[in-house]
Image (tube, rainbow, N blue to C red; front, side, top):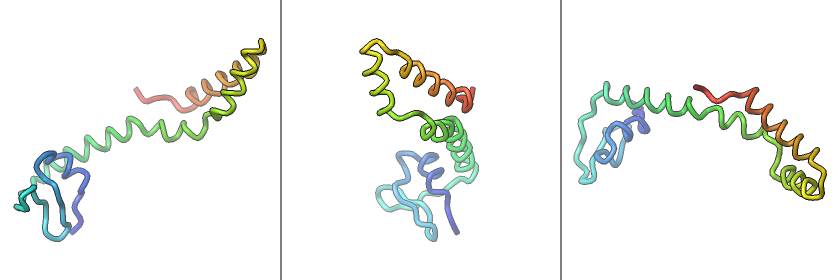
Length: 103
C-alpha cells in the first residue's frame, strides 16, 4: 500500500505527524489516525491546483537573461547607452509573452 503522504499531511494538518505506508497515519502521541479518502482526494485536488498555478515559473526561469546581463546593461545605461537595457527588457517581455501566467 502506498499512501499519498503530501495530501494526507495537507488534509490532516496539525493532526498527522507521521505516515507509514504499511501501518497508516499517526498523531503526535503515536496514535493511529483514521483516514477519510474523500478528504485526502480533496487535498490532492487542491495541491494539484496550487502546483499548476505556479508551474509557469519553472518554465520561465531558465529562459530569462542572466542577472549578469542585467548588471552589464545597467552599467552601460549609467554611461548613457540604454540599448543593452532595452534589449534586456525586451528579452524578459518575450519570456513572459511566450510563457504566460495562467489566469
